[in-house]
Image 1 (cartoon, helix red, strand yellow):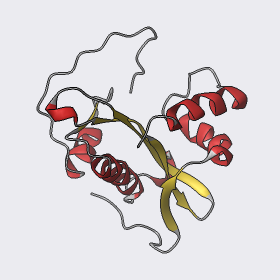
Image 2 (tube, helix red, strand yellow):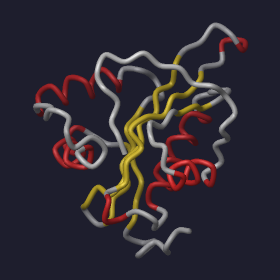
Image 3 (cartoon, rainbow, N blue to C red):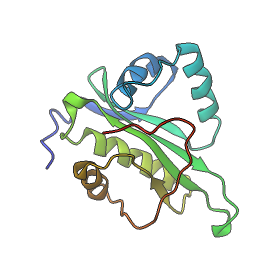
Length: 160
């Protein structure tokens, strides 16, 4: 069960910009603390590539000036479903100290709304987590677990 959001007035969700990258990279350490660090100039290059895909964005949830949550949405062009794109959501992260307060859900739902705004016929995500609370979080945000996912990896999966 979510704790109440500390202050609705101070929490804002918006698309990240280049100036947000240093703080965003710090938050990503909560997702994969053992990953090698990404240099800022490389992050800027990768972020620029993401922004070239129409409708795609990294959303950040801000509590005052602190980034406390994030979700990435990629709008994928498609030739089925009458050419309607689909959305992929990745890197849903809430700072460990701020979990359970609704920040992650609001950020995730902004990413979903953006996918809908760009004509996506579905939005999907995968989680590597086996924790019931993680699965419940996604269900409570409106996602249903109804497909079988497969993946092939070049790097080892994280363990939680």
